[in-house]
Length: 120
Image (cartoon, rainbow, N blue to C red; front, side):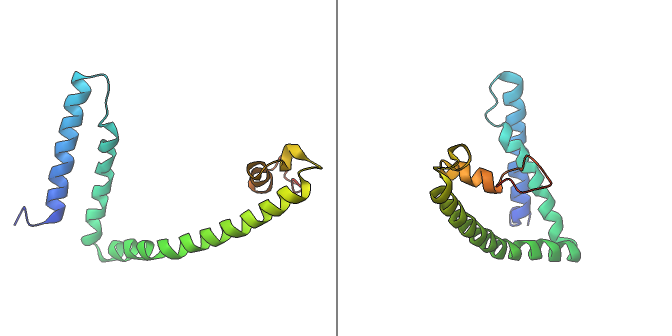
């Protein structure tokens, strides 16, 4: 029954990678396995199966990822449209702020230098 549970296999893999990373840290100055130590944070998802409210919350967050990414993509397309219009309309008048698409995007969407009025 221990090997049949995928969470137990995941825990064994994490403990093994942590031990290898610990040995590598003590023997070598270059730690290429250090990013794998952060995988231990994913063990918290094991609790989602234990508590009903936490399972509901994780499920709700999981199902909201796709609609939120669609909304973000639509906002990015609309913002990019205004950036193209701003670049084509103002690149001769103000090349420091509207000379390229990236500069226009930063001018329109980046931090404002003055909070009491828009940066354009």
